[in-house]
Image (cartoon, rainbow, N blue to C red; front, side, top):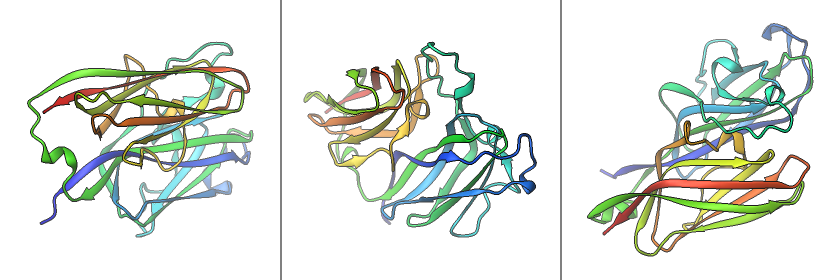
Length: 267
């Protein structure tokens, strides 16, 4: 029987923008806009957490997948099925510390590789809305990963840091974290802070993306009190690297600092 292992991953849905609906209207009176979230054919995916950033979180949501399974009965207010940030509630000129407080599903919800999750949204704030919703969980794979072939003698907590420097308004910038040659590294948490809004795309040396598309930093960064805990985490070879592409959304010069927390694994 093939061995099964898991790696942290994010799938996201976006409405940029979602058309304005009638303020405080019921879902039956609104038109829904569909986003098709395509699960990669390389692995099943188990959903564990939902988090979103919106202009206004007054949004009705409906989800079902290719198999015809509904993820909840009827339509749900986004605020009841997703943690996250309402951009309208963040005071101007205040740097938010990203408190990663997602909605945690009652159990892992497994979706077959190659299937599609249909996510339908309808605004009831009364104003055109921007929504980025991310599903955090694990890719479930078969085979023997490299870390299972090694016998680690001891593990030491460690943090790698990355200062992206100044990112010009509305531009993208690459940053790299190099993993020390003395030990493999098991990434377990992410924290970060930024002067303004941005998206991020993360890839490691094994040519493995951590997400299917760039995600809003509010959907990825945590802080020291509420870090983003990466479920099964990501394992990296000694001497490897993590590449991060950050794209400014603020329209002004931006500064982003990122911490990757985990364990050094010594053989």
